[in-house]
Image (cartoon, rainbow, N blue to C red; front, top):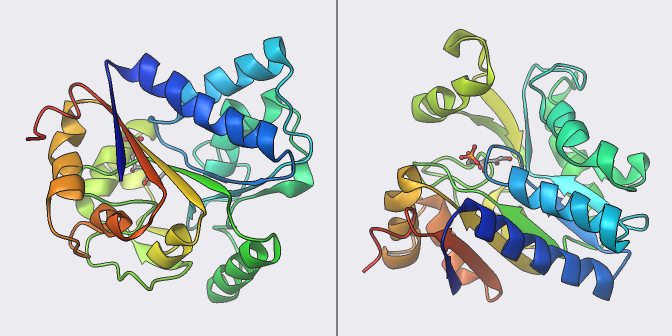
Length: 242
Ligand code: F6R
């Protein structure tokens, strides 16, 4: 794991966007692995700025998002599809038909998971995957206990994750309790992984990920078995590192 220590959220976002832009320039028809949540918003803003002012083009790129809430249709204001449209897709030149997010409203969720996993394989696999980290060490919605061999599947969200995500909803009762998420094995299949962590609330998870043993109890620690992981951590999130 390559660790990049930065000052704060802004710098983390800029450094991450640089890594992504570099890959897009090197391979314009690459496959991007994308995340939602608060963490990557600044990185997406920076990529949008590069698109507008530096001509960075995503016109040949394909993308796959990590996860989606079960039960929310694509148009729901809190769906991850809506999030991606607002924070990235509507503001760059990605082809809509090459942006992939699991369908949380699929009739047959198991089939949807298998379809998603296969679509990633057919696209040639993910070239570069961005990840955030949960306060409990989750990546994607792979909560503690997720096995290293897990693939895209329906997962149960833990009370702490539901609580953490309630800030995006009117009330905690409205937060879905399940999601479709890429598995740990799906994520480890990406050629390059960039994990971002900002803020004191992530400090313990960052420490467990980097300095603890590799264990499904801290899903992010399983990234230690991948040979091309860059972790970009700001000062508050790095505060418990030895
Ligand atoms: C998002 C995702 C989650 C988040 C994590 C951190 O697609 O899969 O793992 O990255 O919950 O969320 P934030 O960035 O809101 O702190």
